[in-house]
Amino acid sequence: MIIPPIFGAIQSVRDGLEKRYIASYLALTVVGMGSWCFHMTLKYEMQLLDELPMIYSCCIFVYCMFECFKMKNSVNYHLLFILVLFSLIVTTVYLKVKEPIFHQVMYGMLVFTLVLRSIYIVTWVYPWLRGLGYTSLGIFLMGFLLWNIDNIFCDSLRNFRKKVPPIIGVATQFHAWWHILTGLGSYLHILFSLYTRTLYLRYRPKVKFLFGIWPVILFEPLRNH
Image (cartoon, rainbow, N blue to C red):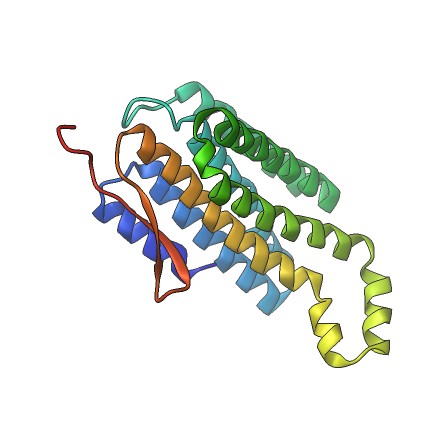
């Protein structure tokens, strides 16, 4: 996920959206670039560039989701402080302990927070957003599940791929599916968050598909607003 979020950030600037949504798109791009650098080099420094931005981007997503129903351009300094402090603590501890399980648990906590907030919104606030909300969550969580399956059963999966046709072996590259699904799920989550925010600000958001395949949000202000 590198190029599509860049276009999303550019469109957000053109539409005059709040900076946190521009930051969301750009953070997703940074995660994509970090992942690309790590898998191209397999160096520890590039691994950090892959994993730590996952924490930072999720913190931005959490901020956006909990600020959906506030005045336009408002800033929640208390929540910002908590998320920045959380990011600093995770970064410091992870650099010292170098334990992947710690990173996965911290990342999982952020994802769990996003899941709860999203369910609240589609259950109690905007039920008609269930399609977009559950699609983004479902795709993301499927990727997250496959990532953990690959981590836990890595050796067994490698042995399995040696015994099956190549096409089946490729299909069981769950780490690759993790990147594809969580990247798409994260992008859709930004759209869900943005859709929720623009609804609250009394805009008319609509999901459109560029070239018939890629989802974007277009909107216009309500009259007399």
